[in-house]
Image 1 (spheres, rainbow, N blue to C red):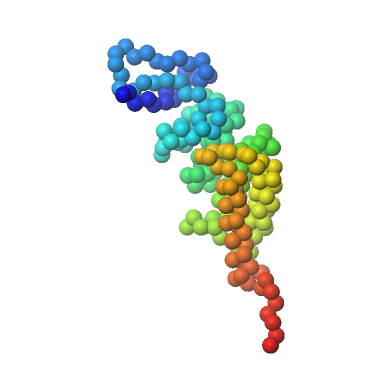
Image 2 (image 1 turned 120 degrees about the horizontal axis):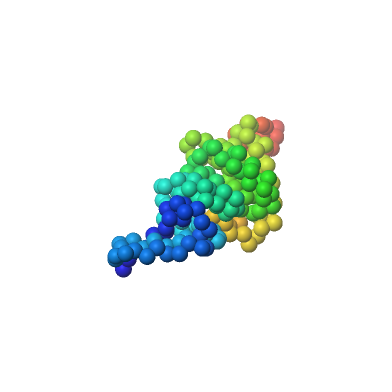
Length: 192
């Protein structure tokens, strides 16, 4: 059984639409069969991400050269950067928001970015007095997202339940902040 890998290098090198590229016929029996890659939906991109592994950002860099205006290529490139902890996505997300402001995939990236800003270097969520307003804004954005896109499924199978988990994580952070007395106790002390 031959191992089938994506012919991404073929796609990037000829710069053609993946729908018009035909499989490469090897002059002899090859160990790897190259074939065109069709990227139509998140499932297709999830398979690409799994195939690319640690090289996923390089793969998306190449895809951006081939299809710079393809919405899902751009969304998934930013998603991959966020998943790898890249803090250099603000400009890319702003560009996506301007071009596709009501797209749920773009709105999800905004939520991921907001949560990433609340995380410390240890990877844990830290809500402080300094970022409390951003945490509250994230809650509003997440609640709106869930109400507007209840059936949405995005990158890596993310859905509204994933957004709810982020929302509850931020709520817990805000509750911890309140409990620490950083901006006043939740209930005034009782006088005995």
